[in-house]
Length: 324
Image (cartoon, rainbow, N blue to C red; front, side, top):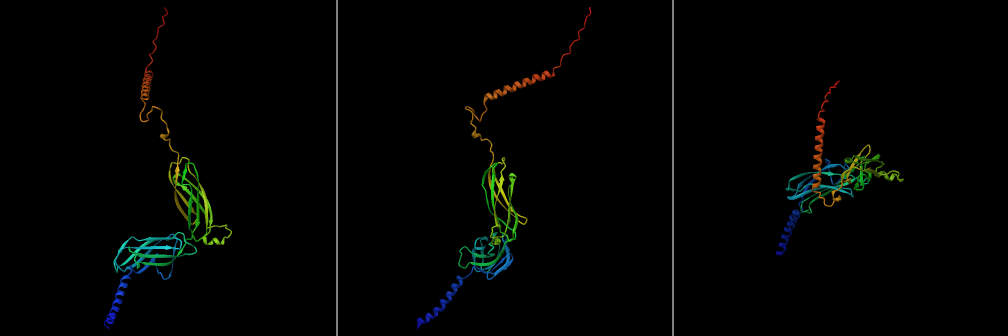
């Protein structure tokens, strides 16, 4: 009977102890978390209709209340569409239990958005150095839309080492990643330091989602274009910046690359074989003596010439003629 009473007293005690342990273990690093994207509050329970455009840099603001004291806390924000992901993180900071915190991050949105899925996932994480199970990790569904007119340079292929006077083929792949059709596109490749450029016509490009409407393949959403750049024959040896611009009346995209040019070099002294007995570091004494003799002869001749030019001619004396 006494043992039964003890067991009855022990059960409530263990229950309270268990609740206390669970309560301590479940203490969250961050409570009351709220997120704003581009100044608009977003909710993880719903699709958020505020549209952001590809390639933009947008502010993401995270508010939270610390659920415990912790050090080396970081906030990471990432966005992905199932293919690619971009992310940004804060530096490490300490938090104090019960205090409120606000962190602002600048997130660069993906430049190439899948037209089949313009609803992207924005993930927000709050964690400390221990990465405990009570770190905050939540996904938000956000809306994205491509700009109407955007060209993307997918690749630039060329020989990175050329010689002065070469004609260099430069192949560029351009894609319409915008929302609208883009007509009369051009590709211009230039090396401003050498004063050379070349332009090629890239034609018309349709949006990628319209591609299925052109079964004949007469129109494309991307194009492969090769332009030829003439390196001047008097180009100096060095590494130069290659500027690739793709444009039309509505937009322009510029990328840069590097190219190494080998120009005409001066004669290398190592290639010249000195005569036997000659010392490149000294002048021959016979050459010095001959030079001195020539200088002396020149000075003497010059002095003689000056005397002759300055000497006055003596007048001819009159001779009287006698008639006797």
